[in-house]
Every structure is written in structure tokens, then in C-alpha cells.
Image (tube, rainbow, N blue to C red; front, top):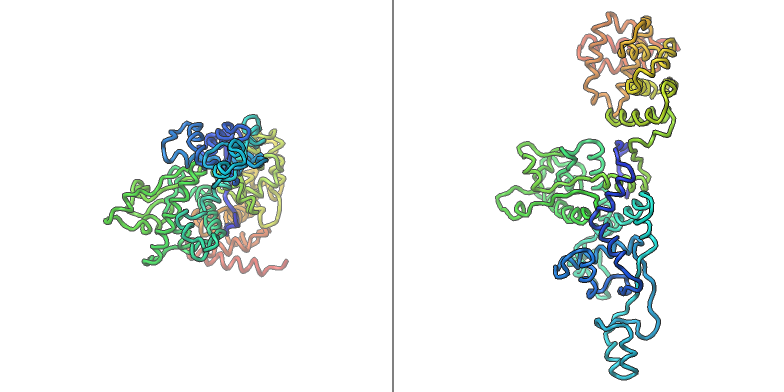
Length: 528
């Protein structure tokens, strides 16, 4: 999977490996591959590519509990067999020796010998198809008696095989693109294998980002036109013309076919495009549906209207699978809980980039693995620092201490006189209703105000424009502290000038904003 232009992916919450392994074993295509591997006896005849011959497909379909007379049952059995072969549940055991190493139109091996060295014998083998043999592979034992991690490793391999198949165009087009020598003319097919694989990977990465970032619709579903638009018009759609809409419609139908192939492996839950939408001349172009809006729907389309154009949702197993592919490509894709065994410094540094809910979940798991109040003392120690990340670490530390509860009080009281942590400690004690909390002096009040705004400016989710509560915080501070800027510019904090400049841009009161800019200038101008 190629690297995507997402610098930091939001953390995802994943079930345990045991739960994910159960989901993998329940995925229809993976389960069918396992059943066929168990069904395959020693010396099962296959063609020289390892495929089951057509004559064996009804028997394989029956082994899967399907109706052998159903035309689709053989295709399902063939696909499951290929997956089993690709991931080692079934292994080729070699080519038979002797002149009879061929299967002439269903004649059993050895028919040539039975006919003798006569012309009839040669006739019996005329047009014969070479065959090999296959049997259950060693990895089948891992499905039955291995650890959950073993099952997930096999499922990931199956997922890779299915994704590779999904990037291949339909066979009708493939046959038309064969040249005189039987090789594929990719220019004629208008298909670049690597490009198609990369596009599918990009769509899945976008789906992962929408799901992990909580930007999908209710239930985690994403309208298919949204993903189609991300492929056909990566820069966005603004007043789309016919050519763009045609590209989106083509991408929509390609994704519809690809997600149909991905659903049986358990990667996604998928609702295909309603054929009635495609057949109805009165319906709007599917490319002009919810694709032009946010992940959800355009105004005027209710959820049922949106779903007619197809919807897709990554399953928990799908999140696990795409995360594994992202990490294999060198992309950082955190999961909630993976910091439980690391130190408080690693925890606070990491959760500084997490959304609030994910940060709280990570902190809870970290605290659950430790004894209080020692864990609280470790958090407070990690929160120190004059570096640019220090304010946000202290904010996250305060959040962590709120989760820790009353048992953190001894550690908090121990830092009341700390110049960086004393304000945080007083706020926490006051919020928990503790008695005899010493009043802060004026210098500490203003230092804490600067530190708090600096933390908000560096918060998760990007720039200050996204922190809607920041102007209100600034207004509250200046309203409750007369002469705020006259004191604030003197604060010995690394971010004082940056905070005052931000207040000059964001403060809702124009006069206060002007005072903030003057104070910022005074801070920049004072001797160091």
C-alpha cells in the first residue's frame, strides 16, 4: 500500500486479537478456503497451475454446503480454492511420474497404460491436460490449533490475495486485449496493474481515515459516491461538468464491483448500487449524488436516497487489515491501547495528537496497567518542559489526572510549589473539591493563563481556527482579570509572545485585540 498524504492518522480502537481471529474465521471466503483445505485429500488432482479442474468443482461446492447444480456454486468453490492455495492452506504435492501424468478429458490416470502401447492408447491421451496433485498444507494446522495471531496472519495473506484480484479488470476486457502471441496488451486494455492497485489502496486509505477520524455517517458507513469522487477528482468537485461527472460515475461502478469482491473476505460491509438507480432515466446521475458533498449526503437526500448509490463500511477486521497494510508501507497508524506498556513521556507525547475521546481511552488503558499514586507522579514528571509541546502535555496530564481520580491527590499535592506544575495542581485540587488548596500568586495565575492558551493553540486537529472555544476563553480571561495584557507581557513563559499574537488575531473584542498586539510587541522587545 503506497504512502498517503496524511501526516498523522487518528488512532483506531480495535477488538482483541481473539475477537478479530473469530471474525476472520467467520468471514465467508476465508471459512470456505479452510473447509476446502480440510476436504482436500492427499493427491487431490489439480491442473498444472494448482486450480481444481472443472469436473471437481461440483464436488468442491457440495463440500461447502452449496448446490452443485447452481452455476455460481462452482465459481465460489474455485475462488475459495485459489485463496486456500495462495495462503498455504493447500499445497501442491508435485507432478506424477510416468507416461500417464495427464488427465484426458476426465479419464483416470493410468488409462494410457490400460490401453497398452497401441494406437488406441495414444488416442486416449490425445488432447490430454497435464495435472498435478495437491493436499492440505501445513498452515491448516494453525487454523485449528494455532494462536489468534496465526489465524490473523493467514487472513491478512488472504486479504492481500483478494485485493490483488479486485484490482484486475473483468475477464471479457482481458480476453479482448490479448495480442497475437497471447500476451496482454495493457495499452489496448487501458489498464495499468500497479496504478489500479494503488487506486484501490488509496480508496481504502481514505475509507480508513474517514472511519478512524469519525467523519463517516451514522454506523460508520460512507456513501460510495464520496469515495468515487476522491478517485475521479482528488482535488474536490466544485461545479462539476459532464466530463468530471462521467469520471465519477465510472469510478463509482468500478468501486461497486471491487467492494463486491472484498465483502466476502470480511474487509467491509457493503450495500451495492441499486440497479434501479442505473436503469431509471428519471433519476439523477449517481455521480452528482452525495459525491459533491461531505461524507454523509448532500442537502435534500435522506439516508435511504444516499444508500441507493451504494454505501460501504470498514468492519473491525477491515480496520485491522488496512492498518496492517498502512504500517507495512511505513505509515504511522496508531491503535488505542498500544501505549499501555510505555512510559508516561511516550503517552503524553502521543496523545497530544489524538482527538479528545481517543486520548481519554488511551489514558485509561495506561492507568489501568499501573498502581496509583505512583502513576500520577510519573505523569506529572513527564508533563514538565519548556519545549513547544510542554503546554499540551500539561493539558493532557490534567486530563489524565481527572481519569485517575482521588488516588492521585498525594502526587498532585507534592508539586504545588513547582513553577510549571503548581497551577495545574491547584486547578485539579479545586475541581475535585479538595480542602485547604493554597491560593496562587498573581505571577502563577498569568503563567497558567498563557500555558493554557498555548496548549489550545497546539491542540489536536490542527490550527487555532479549528479551536472554536479559544476566542471565548480569551474573552473570559480578559473579562475576569483587569489589566490582563499589562501583566501578561511580563510572563516568563516560552510561548508568551505567540499567545499574545494569537489573542491579537482571535480576540472577539477589537480593543482587546489591539491591546494584545501591543503586549506581544513589548514581549518581543524586552531584553533576554
